[in-house]
Length: 113
Length: 114
Image 1 (cartoon, rainbow over the protein chains, first blue to last red):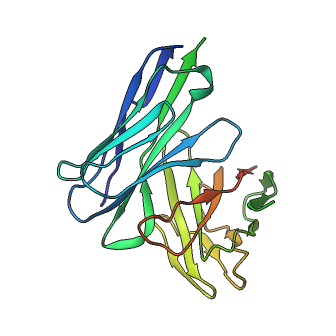
Image 2: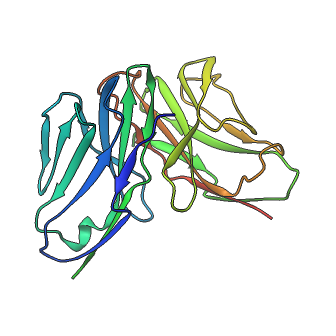
């Protein structure tokens, strides 16, 4: 059974704090790693798709790194703002079945003004 | 506007009844997916389809059925065999499955069994 774990499950920070979350996935048969942001009352939307070991992606104040050899990805938010409050999902795709994503349970971030 | 629509937003069903959730996309995507979300859990894949008239079971297909007669549409039927159907259901679509196939999600349907 392929398992994707995210930690922490939830996080409360003050506006301006920087924060990071972890996504752990199987290190064998890696194909791709996706990050999504899911705001309350909205649909999940894609942040990053990462495929190569050592990949780093950035979108504004949000960035992500990927280590396929040890099976983890970090998502960083620099200077958190209240509008960053959301659940952040990572999803793993393995080479044995590239037709589907396996999602972690998510990290819920609450940024207090 | 291009996007994915799901209807209805809220659905109530009596035990023992089948119910069908609608999902339509106008993004010209080849692949479509159905997920279920329960509190404290991630999205779990029910069924997915990469091409018209073909679909595959996901991780929790028991008690569900789908059809893919048109590229734009991928309805999900929750049958009376599904033991615990109360959940939030999300539909998604993407270009044909590959490395960079970002999935685009609909707004979801919340199903409650009374």
